[in-house]
Image 1 (tube, rainbow, N blue to C red):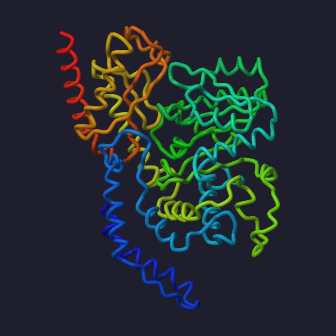
Image 2 (image 1 turned 135 degrees about the vertical axis):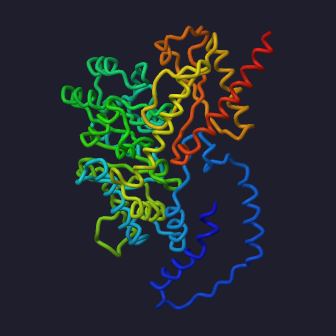
Image 3 (image 1 turned 180 degrees about the vertical axis):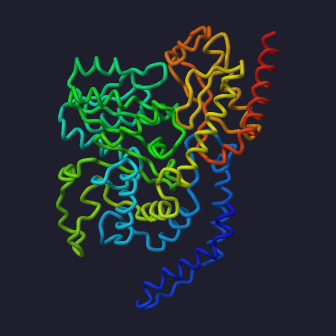
Length: 457
């Protein structure tokens, strides 16, 4: 929290600059009760202590990445205006900044022409993508891998679009043979391709799916909510790089700036390759927004009121950290990937663990070696609990046994799934803390296994 305590003077200077734009207005006297504010704010600070330490490098659990400094400052500054990016009346400057920011994201994916806007979340962005897909291919089925985010099946239920999941292979990617079988047997309108699955960060084989598209004519929606920004990095493996290089050929893309884009929640983004899908959004509003005849963002969004502050923070971040290969922002992601590869190598060389597949991005998943799936799951949960006591914060993931059948380990599959330990090494600082992270995991695992053996004997 050094940023906030040392940047209040900078924020005050920026506020003074902001106020210069409104100096011609009559002054409004407002004297807040600072004593009352102090009491409540300190109470908030105490209540907020009841959280995991998400910004700290020893937190390697869920997909929680702190916003960058410029995003926090720009967001706070913009709240003095509190713009609404539904229409230009609600936020002229922030609407222009949103258009510029999403154009940079589209350019990152190789799109010069596009229709795009920010959303309140990746879920809302995916909803818009599937809503458009359902309008363009009515009554046709949407399919996504069995390891895709559950939001796709839920959204299809909301939109009354038929949905089916596709089996994954041993690398946790969509199985091409299974997809082709579905395409031959059913009327598929849209295939959702995930680049960065939630559990393991796996990458669906987009090049092969594009080949099938040329034969079967379905839409491709790329859910890159987690993994989209990795298109900028220089240390992906060949098959992963090939998938990212094909992204410009899909029909729509979702990416979440509030994940690897270093933004506060909620800031999602939906992008369409064909701008003409904007006609599906057209609506008439008889009572709002008459000060401008320009196209406003509310005309290309299912959401109405949207936080203009999110656009301001994103614009400022991309101004400071451009979305270019080899840049500082890309370097952050490369460090996260290197951290994941480093932990993976250590796990792979440790006889106490099983790692069925290497990380494709910065998420690592591993199993505690044991005679049965149920015992391995129990040990994973115990390591998770003891690690937290030692200030190392991991995550758990429940994965199907099919992902581990080819690992060569003689696990007694007394249940159909297994609880794995999981780490999202998504902060660039994780690379500098790898030794500390590994030493703690090593010590915790030794302690748990020793205790387990003593109880068994």
